[in-house]
Length: 292
Ligand SMILES: O=P(O)(O)O[C@@H]1[C@@H](OP(=O)(O)O)[C@H](OP(=O)(O)O)[C@H](O)[C@H](OP(=O)(O)O)[C@H]1OP(=O)(O)O
Ligand SMILES: Nc1ncnc2c1ncn2[C@@H]1O[C@H](COP(=O)(O)OP(=O)(O)OP(=O)(O)O)[C@@H](O)[C@H]1O
Image 1 (cartoon, rainbow, N blue to C red):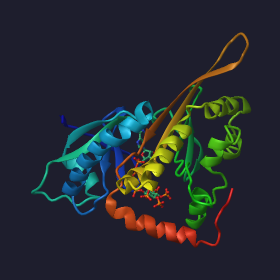
Image 2 (image 1 turned 180 degrees about the vertical axis):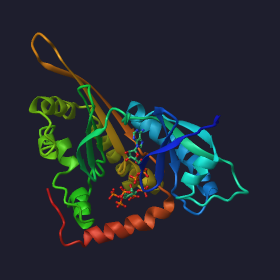
Image 3 (image 1 turned 135 degrees about the horizontal axis):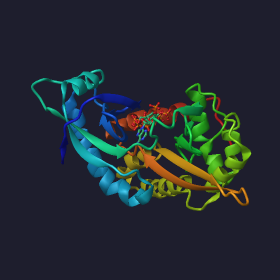
Image 4 (image 1 turned 120 degrees about the horizontal axis):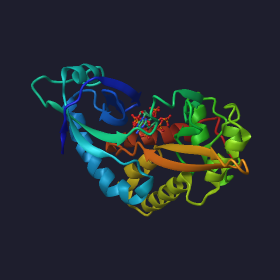
């Protein structure tokens, strides 16, 4: 694994279990550092290695070209990086002097995609500052839903989120439903129609995630309980979808190319099982379940 010596660290993103940073002026490349285990850097390094093997063995064969490319690298623990990282994880000065991280392309080069035109917990829409280009960052959650109620909408309601749409509907209503999701974004109808076309395609990223969730769910149902963490990983991915628009001068028809990438495919630690059972019980007895 290569070791990279880096400086001028900037924070790009933060989730529940990772921070995402860039170094120097290069905003095209990001580094994703696990902060899942606050008690020690060593525990995170150990987890990152196990996670990397899991992704290569289980996720790459399933998601293939949809998966964002990534590389495993050692980051030298400079004083600057240690200062930032120690806000989340305890660093023992006598222990490792590198952080194992995932190096990946920046799917939203922030110098250009500065305009956020829509945001809620499961969707963010950005527009480019001067090109005709949009990025949607979405968390579609349980696209395959084996429950009698909608897991996504019930879960959002339980968490007190006022989100009126569901990515399962976008998958099954084949595109048009995107208008409901982005109704308050002011995006032009012409562009919205081009974006809708993507979600009508058989091989759109939601369909891919649905297929893999269904396959893995069936494996678990058939007794392969060891695949439950994989199923939970597939139910918690994030997708970036980018549209670059161009209009043809002669007929002024709008054309676009589109690229979808999946990130956040981390191995769920097996100790989360109790959390999943607890959440399932809470939602099963929740009195404001959503059905659709
Ligand atoms: O437990 P849930 O269903 O609330 O889902 C958690 C997510 O909540 P959300 O669906 O966004 O409200 C939660 O997302 P947030 O940090 O709340 O955005 C995490 O993705 C968490 O996974 P991990 O522990 O970081 O690996 C997720 O945990 P898992 O259930 O996927 O293990
Ligand atoms: N390759 C990337 N390009 C651009 N932004 C990214 C990239 N990877 C992560 N991010 C940003 O960083 C944020 C946090 O990253 P990530 O989702 O990997 O964290 P996490 O801890 O796994 O999240 P969660 O809380 O869902 O478990 C993302 O929501 C996204 O905005």
